[in-house]
Image (cartoon, rainbow, N blue to C red; front, side, top):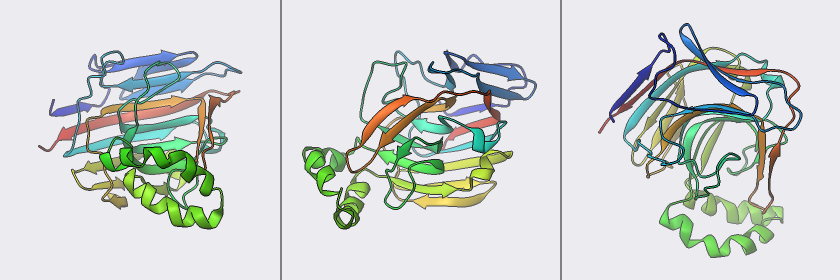
Length: 261
């Protein structure tokens, strides 16, 4: 596979694997695709497309590649619940899957409170971000036996400041907060994913340039759901469902992915 392009002008392309869980729906409209979660008090809802089979996990992409997505949230950003975004991951886990693997991701990602995925030193654990993560690297695996004692030590702020930056580098974590208002406006997001670096941009303006990029295969995914996650270097770990009392929608107008190999 060397190229995917879809402007959704003729409905939903059969190349997409669609997930509509709970009150989630994926609806083609003229020239766009609507991902919608309807109100629900306690049901997990997810509207998602991916370019891999959820059962076989035939992940198609690896660097070098370039991605371009034109998208926006049709819901006021302050009313968004759960998570939404688009980019590449290895589908390490999800509420509708029993499979668990070490995560890797390179994407534009939003999470609303009570999510607190404080993976990058000094960066809030929720909000609209450009982000990378690769826990599958040998350097990351080598420090796995130290995870529990390190988490305890890092509950002391001065030790967190000292110990976590080298751990973050081994996990290839890099994040940049984006203006949340961007998510509520029509913008084109691009990702240039190379073997040893990556550049994220919005409307052609770089927002994150990093040398921490995943090295393994990943699949494209775009979604909106109502789950939250708490994952911190200090060992806090929890997941759950956020009630939503209003419809929330992500709109994607155009997707282009090109292999540069």
